[in-house]
Image 1 (tube, rainbow, N blue to C red):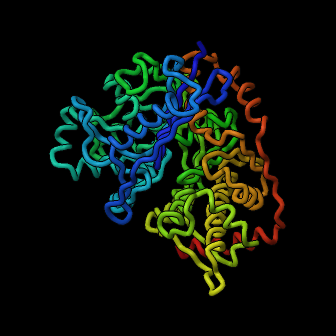
Image 2 (image 1 turned 45 degrees about the vertical axis):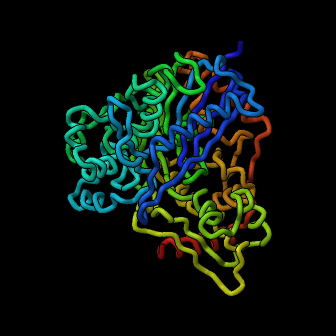
Image 3 (image 1 turned 90 degrees about the vertical axis):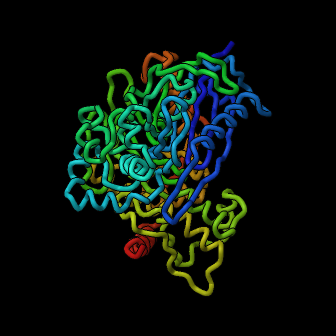
Length: 499
């Protein structure tokens, strides 16, 4: 019987489950969406049980759905990757979630972050965690839950309550409550983890008034942390042995194992990451220093530029404006006009992330005229997604002091050829897209394989991955004249100033 690696990719709008064999060939796929909740402007919530049900449904689709080429008995190890920063709390005794899951896009703690900044605390947070004081991260979200849920703080101080990002909650549910853990990559996104000391910071915990008893144990990204117990559709006893936040998993899944290698993921948001090896590169350009992964004693850091809205802008055109009926329609609609007709779209629907860090910013569309059509608006949205990556690209080259001549890409929106060509034109760099754009799930599977000793190290894994990437991949090379690029960038900068 063949051995398979099951990757659970728990994302912002849905859960994907993929099964890979030891040759990294995709054997099965399942996907389930789940509801998004917007109780107030700037607030974004999930319900923990709805997340869990979407995962169980995606597992069922992958292993028992039409066209499946995998069985539960073949699953040898499980890897988890997840939407980062989304914050959950639950009862240790019953596993019952308490309150909503506050999503990474949520802006409700902007005032708390501003107060911490006014108190002069941002340099200390940045030094210890590599992060900015922004509502994006988990620490202030957890503080909000503790402050706004009756009796929760007292229960947390007594050790009755667990905090976790989505990876922690997934391991808890998959193991039947046997393990309360998070990996280093997810811990590094909480505002509570000292990435130099490689431990929870008691000082920052005190600043945010977070009881230490509710924090999970921090583990590496590739080790056996638990086994499955009473999970619908899965046999008991399967090792859970790969964990990484979605962007770090994508960096790993793209094979960016060496210093200076970079990838950009185009999902709900868009995220540019560069492997910086054992060195913490401190950004002077508005980027983040974060943990990429830990495998054994190897501890790898990354530089990251985060934008909060990318594919979500396309969803807004579909669900908010009704201009398209499916996200895939946007490419043909945008391609029906030669340009955006002077329209510029700034995708700041949830504020501006790196390098600006302006939580108060909001989406903006400028340059409208009587001749503007929905095709121009569609093209402007795609161009806006690419233009914000240019800001990250420039900042990353400045901080890393390295030229970026190529970028690996993945994520759902990376399948859009018009977007990828425009991105290559703006960056003046090659865009390399593998055949399988779900690098996030692939990275989780590869980490699980290392944790389960399918491969001794990345040295043996790398040639296998390279062979997969070089077969049927696509390369987009720059074609646009420099004067036209400068025109686009000038319009963009003017629009961002007004967002």
